[in-house]
Length: 145
Image 1 (cartoon, rainbow, N blue to C red):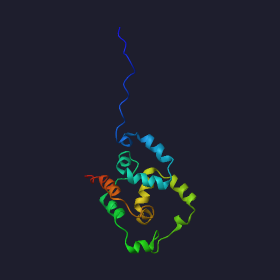
Image 2: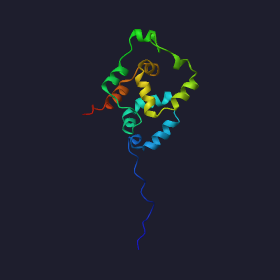
Image 3: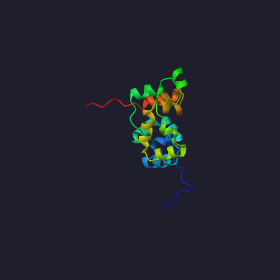
Image 4: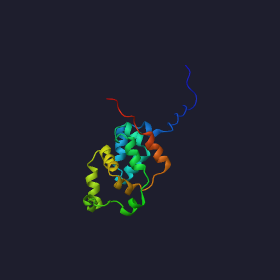
């Protein structure tokens, strides 16, 4: 009979990109406690991971170009609303807007944000090159019919 001497070896270190290996349920639990602003920031940082789990809509070249285009001087002067745009959703108090958005699925929240470029620019007036690269990497080739 031989007994092992000493303590067992330590467990291996976690993978470098450990967020990538989280199960969908755990990512959903994290997202559940984020404000919409924070969720939008997280989405841009890890778009491909959320897309893989079905928590963000597919990124296309058109969407990428629309949201990464630098706002013009006219865009800056018009601001959030644009000429002749209705402000009804944004006339509501923040708490009520947040409550309405909280009923959307995570992918629908981001789809809503990406579909309204003027609102998107209100959250992200300028993007870093690294964020643009992350979004570019998330672009999926068009599906063949």
